Image (cartoon, rainbow, N blue to C red; front, side):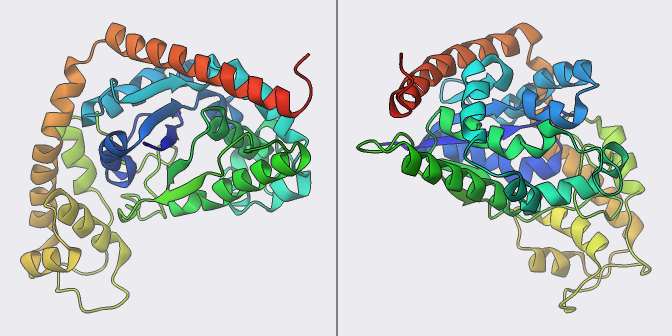
Length: 335
């Protein structure tokens, strides 16, 4: 039998090539192997964009279009909007009794993201909101509401999956029933390499504006690569340094990914090429690679995207009702 798989995207901006190579392409395999769900996590996005609801609303359609343009099939992958499933919020409340505030504060992913959001939460997180601190609990509810068994994530999200597992185990200890209410979810790590920002930042990020988006025009893509950070050198040299310059390494890695090469082979092919012509070649090749995705994206109509999301949300709503019936029976509140 197929396992239930759930992953999601925060609609805080359109998706970029880091998402493409890190998760979107692997989702095509997931939808063949598993009963696959992709959640548009608008409630989670509001935890740090609560004052920008229009931005969230717009990007719900943008990121769904990105997923569909890559080739995901809505007949095989169920797309749904988090806020259209009220049972997630209800389950979040029940789960919130099973995890301490100190545990949430110690969560490595939460700590990192608080530090990255000094402009929103202050230097020491003194303006940290209840919603943001508690979003790992909400994420546990996202996963368990469809009774997911597999959760594809990046390595930075492993603490979140561990938090979910702890909550599930605590629920089962507190409200034991034969066979358990939820499966214990496992993380599925992508083997795709992480793409850092074009400015040399640790990651390509929507919020840092250092990314190449799937929706970018060829001209915009070329301009971004032209101005991307390199290093003090002038040409690419074969990969012999165990700690190569991260910025030029990142650009060569993008080149290797679009040509389905090992990075060491890409370095050999490009050995001696000056940075300027390399960037021109990379821009041309990346635009060729993204061209079919962009063409499909242009063909997608808002009405069709809404249809996909409405149908998926309706399907998940039914499953969520089934899950909450099991939860309330286990908790002895099925009055």
